[in-house]
Image 1 (cartoon, helix red, strand yellow):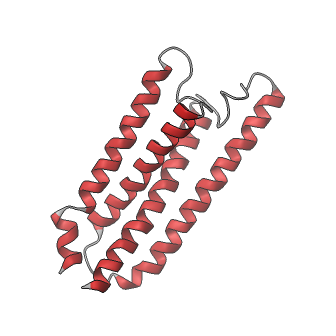
Image 2 (cartoon, rainbow, N blue to C red):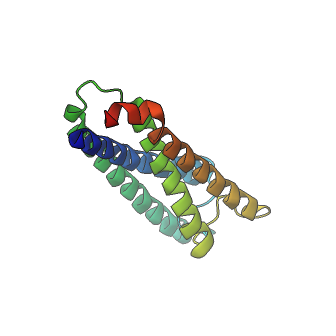
Length: 161
């Protein structure tokens, strides 16, 4: 039983890392690059000319490098835990862990970067507070859904027996 509990925690931890990395990539690719709503430091150094755009691009690149490292860490941990699964049902624990990680990323990034440090806002300008709060609410909803999935009977029944 102790081994199953350790495997369960390892799976949730690996999938949470993966979710955190995927959340960071989603944020960077969609909000920074495709929609171009903000850059990592666009509130500190508004991208108004080529020099400030390059500065922001560098910090966006460092953000993506960190996202890549977190994702790789999640994949490595998942690779490590996979042999311990022994055919057990792992979808609720894995999915819950991904939601936990993604939600935690959004809440942390929303609180630290958007609110406390004011490095950037989700969508600067009119209504930026509403966008920032919606981002936090989305993260909190994913976090809560992840907790619910990880603690669900379908997840814990397999791992506690």
